[in-house]
Length: 478
Image 1: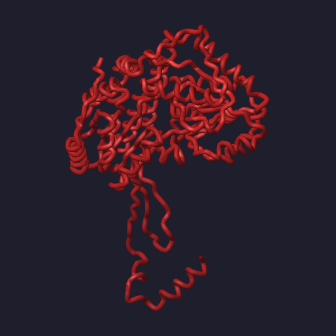
Image 2: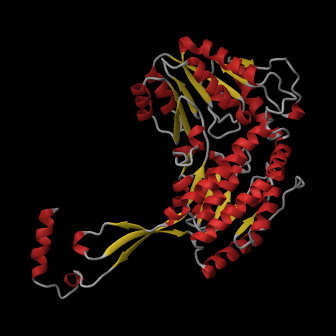
């Protein structure tokens, strides 16, 4: 097991690493499809070989990380994503023919997907393996060199990833940089050809400001408060089950976890009871339950408890679902799944992304009020709508804006290889996953092939007398 330490990388070393990768890219050119596939195969083999070590590292970082959640959400999804890329890469790389304007015939035109060069990736702590390796695999598939900066909040996972990647790739192909916020700030200021950041909206603004100094294009995968809207005719048991499980998975430390639920006022109590019942059944014990994940750090543990203290002081009803009334010692950083009833907009729990196992339940009197509630807030990363009335659901989707959406479930849109993933507004910009990921890490190069004979003689002086007549005719045609 790698030690829980992080290395510091001075600015000069970061700049040197970037220079080495860019020079190698310029000298070697873009790798062919066979080389890219071989890289992905070696990466997948190393992950399969180190599965237990990876899960152990994440458990060390969290204090307790459900092994099942680690395998499902980090290891399986990463390997499945790499398999999907390998299956489709050859077709994604093919040049696309595009129509040529008639006046330029018989020329040809098309789009080629070119590697950008060196991609920078700054990954988060909540899914420290998947959200680092999946973007890295996508960037490699697009033909790029990669510099990876894992989160310092998950140092054991970061150290293991650095060890694994160095066994597969030379540093001029993949370079892993470990360190704290100062290293992260220096990393984001490098002149990458593209930079992907996954994390909070606050830090995302700083990343974008730093990248702007180099005109570096960015993909920002941020967060926000993703609502679950329970419709008037929704199956309440289904909605409660899906929301409860989505909120408790990884102890709510998921960027697309349902942040709060909007429920018809007359059904709030029944919904809350059903959510509580799901939590009691899923987690009959908490303190020593390996299936119930701890909060990543003391700082985040205190932050979440601070949200609950603020809500309670301002009049909310707080229901901790702790079936055996265990003492949850702060040293273990476990917070019981918690309902917040009667929340009001001025409470911090309704203003800040919760990122923990806490579910505010917001009542509404009519559907337009619920839609307005969503639209009055920053655009969320995800929207979850529960109802069996297709027309009603389509109406909600058409009147709201979110990065992605699920109907009658939560979070599963992210698990679809063929769907793009990304935010909008304060929840992010740009998308990746599958083909959209390949395109995001690629430069679409427009290529025009001139042929002879052609019409270009009409476009150079001295202009023939007939040109004006032709132009007037073309203008009439529109």
